[in-house]
Amino acid sequence: MKKTLVVMVAVCAVLAFVGGAYAQEATYIGNKQCKICHSKAEEGEQWTKWKASPHAKALEALATPEAKALADKAKLDKPAAEAPQCLKCHVTAFDEKTGAPTAPLLKEDGVQCEMCHGPASLHVADGKKFKSGDKTVNMAAHIKPTPDEAVCKGCHNEQSATWKADRYTLEGGGKAGFDFKQAAAKLAHPNPTKKK
Ligand code: HEC
Ligand code: HEC
Ligand code: HEC
Ligand code: HEC
Image (cartoon, rainbow, N blue to C red; front, side, top):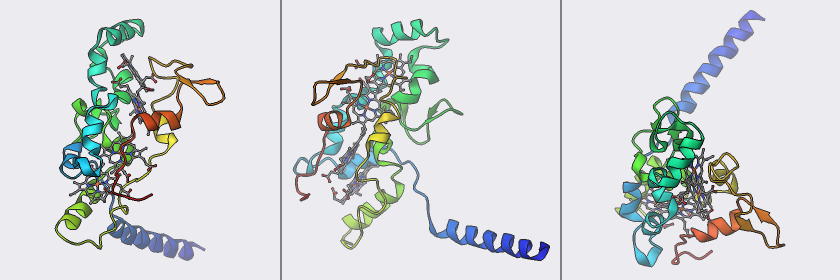
């Protein structure tokens, strides 16, 4: 019995080691990288569209008089733009331990690409290969191509300081604080050269 257990533990350790060596994890890289390859107007200029969207201004939104009033109401001991209670939804991948976005992401970039598409270091490496001529690279392999409703609802929920349960009017006339279909359409950034 004891011997079997020892063998099993040893096998698991080997499997974990092999798994770790092959399944390389993507890490956050920052949206300056995305700008290099996703700014062409003919391909849908995703970066430019994001830059003009509310998500790019999510940190600035914490410095407005409205934000100050909300912070006062919540009796925060710090200004909204420094308070974890607000930052956790107004920046990308907020890290409770440091009180900042996960390095190397910048607070100023607010809610950026990797919040929805996931950590993208491996995708950027793929993109560099692709751009240097290797068209066999599968560009969908290391990126979340279609972020779903669950990602949005991590922030678009009743914990939001500005949540309005009737912000969206649904097709049947009902109301909702968030509606994925309409919200995603407001911020759509498709690549027109790709057929769907
Ligand atoms: C070195 C170039 C390069 C960089 C940097 C890059 N990408 Fe891409 N990306 C591509 C190429 C090429 C494609 C395939 C063509 C397309 O779908 O636009 C692609 C596709 C995508 C897709 C669509 C995948 C699919 O199959 O529908 C997403 C989403 C994406 N990139 C997100 C990002 C994000 C987020 C960043 C920044 C963290 C980024 N990319 C950085 C080159 C790059
Ligand atoms: C659970 C996530 C979440 C938390 C926590 C949160 N926010 Fe927000 N905030 C949002 C979302 C999502 C929006 C977009 C509107 C909505 O659905 O509430 C938003 C919008 C705002 C706006 C409006 C921006 C504009 O352009 O009109 C302000 C101001 C704001 N938040 C301030 C704060 C402050 C101050 C705090 C901390 C006391 C805070 N938020 C905490 C998610 C959050
Ligand atoms: C990390 C938190 C976070 C995530 C995840 C997130 N958002 Fe937001 N969103 C915000 C914040 C904060 C604001 C307000 C920013 C401002 O006004 O400057 C906002 C604003 C918006 C707005 C404008 C306000 C409104 O409701 O009309 C839309 C539309 C929106 N987000 C759609 C989405 C969609 C669609 C997704 C998922 C694909 C998503 N968001 C994911 C935090 C988030
Ligand atoms: C609030 C969440 C959110 C943010 C932030 C965001 N995206 Fe997206 N992105 C989406 C959604 C949702 C789709 C549509 C997926 C689908 O086709 O269903 C998408 C699609 C894409 C596509 C595929 C377009 C196509 O037609 O194939 C690319 C490329 C892309 N995003 C790049 C970016 C880049 C680069 C950034 C930052 C500059 C960014 N996205 C920021 C949610 C987001």
